[in-house]
Length: 325
Ligand code: F6P
Image (cartoon, rainbow, N blue to C red; front, side, top):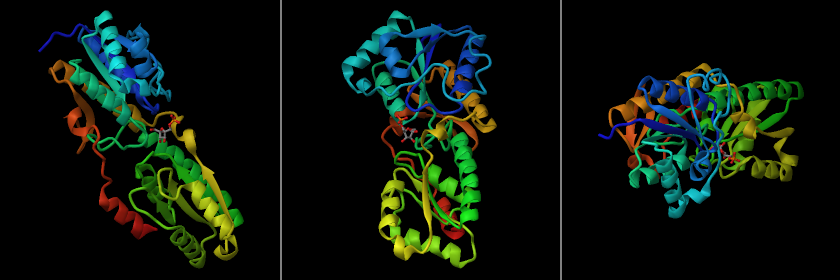
């Protein structure tokens, strides 16, 4: 096991509320081991350029309650190229970094695995509002994003009731329907459209109409952005068929609003536990692993076992949503 004197930490991909709590915990737990800590700005892009700053206990104070990431983040498709990764490796050597903590989702952990395979001691931290990363039942940011979506849904239901309207609400999640399914269950939707379970526009219209037939004053469909019929396509279908649907419909796409919130208590605690878990894993000599939460415990899973693996939504949740719809 090599001796660690200095680590670096970066946040990459889409930002997620709770990332700051993870940065803070990584920094303070590493300092407690008497390791130096460097913060890498703008994710992999900053890593390749050697854009780093020393982090102290003070520099990470007063960040936990803030959404986003104090280090900045970036999408960096260039990191797929071997040359770019070699530059990153050189920068790490120049800065005498002994280990790297990478906080992010699927794309970020793919980069983490590539670095691990080049011999860099890397630990990943599961963070994405999509909750689509295998190796952790829950990821940093999804709880806050879900709460933001629910607040918007509750507000839309108020105006929907006043006008006896139906609403289509599109939530994020990339190719994963987790956020939409949870928002649908917790938001009392009539129907949820997700990539994992196709629903035709005719069926959506039938379910929304049924809500009125049961005496409701509004009807709600939650649509995952990755669903075959996303909000745009569904909205177009309803425009063409408006004469026979029998109700007035409006569409709202929540978009990046879902990523910009103040982290919930859950995400602050999860970020903190994951950050501490990453330092503990490095201290134990683990590398090339992802820190996650499984069955209530902080776990590590080899990155090689989770990268490229599609996370499966618990079928029980589909069943529950169907009963409640
Ligand atoms: O992965 C998080 C996420 O917010 C997805 O839900 C969404 O599809 C994507 O990022 C948006 O990416 P960008 O912020 O680069 O537009």
